[in-house]
Amino acid sequence: MRARIALWAILVILPLLGLWLLLWQPALDIQWEHHPAHFWLVLGAALVTGVLAFATGEAAHRRGDARLFLISLAFLVSAGFLGLHALATPGVLLEGHNAGFEIATPIGLVIASVFSAASSFVEANASLLPAVMRRERVLRGFVLAVIATWAAYSLSGLSPLDQPLPAEVATPPLVVLAGLGVVLYVVAAARYYRVWRQRRRPLPASVITAFVLLTEALITIVFAYNWHATWWEWHLLMLAAFGIVAYTAHRQWREERFSDLYLEETRGRTRDVSVFFADLQGFTSFSERSDQMYVSTMLNEYFEVAVPMIANQYGGEVDKLIGDAIMVTFNTRGDQLDHALRATQAGLALQRETARIVERHPGWPRFRVGVNSGEAMVGLVGAEGGRGYTVIGDAVNLASRLEGQAKVGQVVIGAETYRALPDGTKVQPLGGVQVKGKEAQIEAYVVLDLPLDASSERGDRLRWENPQAQG
Image 1: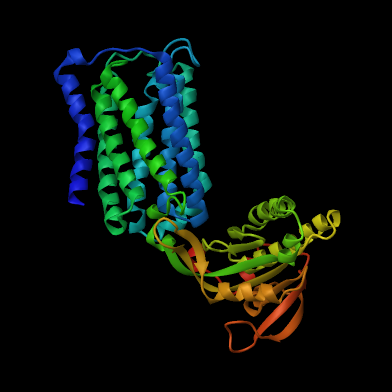
Image 2 (image 1 turned 180 degrees about the vertical axis):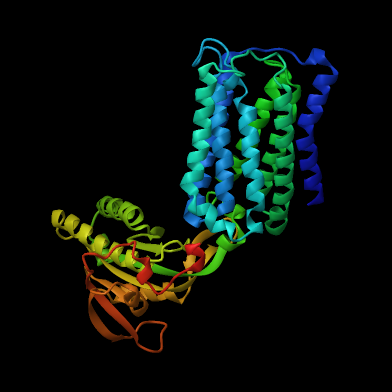
């Protein structure tokens, strides 16, 4: 391990040694002004960083992870300002030079360093975590507004961006800003070293490497001359920084890619959830007598309707699709006080929408649904190379058993789910039901109807009120 760390240190120091050599021997700092190469290099870095911003933002939203969300903002602001810098290439958007677009990259790097450093401190104050995630849209909108404002001001021709830049890009204000960015990236890298020490995983190591390379990019900017080797060096350092993170995340395709950056409390904790299981009654016999392409067509038609509806209309998270079976979870982030109602509504909607499909395809098997609510462990499960984010516990097992009690077209719920539904819910009691894994009989109900005014916003009626979710 020490040998690897030593090798890593040597590799990340090489860019600074290269910079020192170019400054020591100015004759080596050759000039190469090639506009297409600059455009595609910077645009490629912007696209890679933009993909990272989207992927980390989505993962942060699903898990309610404030650390990863702040990292996604760092990627977003970097991607935006890199895009502006790419457009500064003469002959692309503008015929001449634009000072604002030309210095967009160092400005973006400094702003990104603020979010990077903030992400490394976010776990120090647990009360801030839900506050950050409640302001997801506001913070993301603020970043986009900053990028748009900088672009508009740069194009306006107002002072001081109306003046052409000298060959040496770093003016005194930019030197100060670059120094601030260097300090913040160093702090972020040092604090993420603690995350790596705890988990010894590639992704935290790649993030630390990215912060170090971005630090070196800012240092290089201070000494670079436009279109010289020193100038090209900081462009390459940025591409390498974001490319390393993207490559490492891509390599972890068998597991949840950004899980190694999660805060401890979002990696695994006990939470009140609702779990929804559904499968097709008679699927095995249908498959045996049907062509496999026809079976695949049937499943695709069902799931193309079911998955978006459950996720978008009811906020469910599709945990697994296994053959004809689907497992959906609610309140895994702790922000759905009405999770029992959402799960029940999703079950009824699934039966309603898939019944319409069966009207067009008589003979297709139909779903049966089971829903249960209760306490479960929400977090990462599995060995290295195959870990995923899921829920485990007795509440989950019981949801699966209840699905086995349902008949075609029915939604069967457990007692805890029923107690959390609004007044006026119509059910048919199944009496004491014996299920596998339970010595005593359990209460179960077939849901017949929900009141017309039942809304997924009526969380105050529910039994499971999560204080942290309420902020």
